[in-house]
Amino acid sequence: MSVQSIAARLVVVSLAVAAAGFAPAAVAYVGPGAGLGVVGAALAMLAAIVVTVIGVIVWPVRMLMRRRKQRASEAGVTKHDE
Image (tube, rainbow, N blue to C red; front, side, top):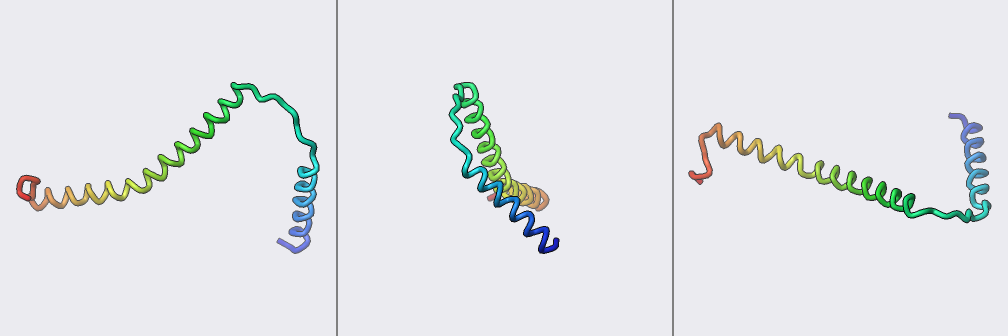
């Protein structure tokens, strides 16, 4: 990217931010259905993130446990022998 194109993009972004900053406040009614929809979507996104993080943490532990169990069965060790 050239310096001129970066400067042009900076000017455009600056003007957009300034225009958004000077916009008057919108006075609008948001009904309970739309509000609950937003809350439900936010909770779904949060749940998806939490489940993903838990999956990333639990998956290696499950693989280690499975490998340990497989090695124990190959060696002929059972839970009753321990």
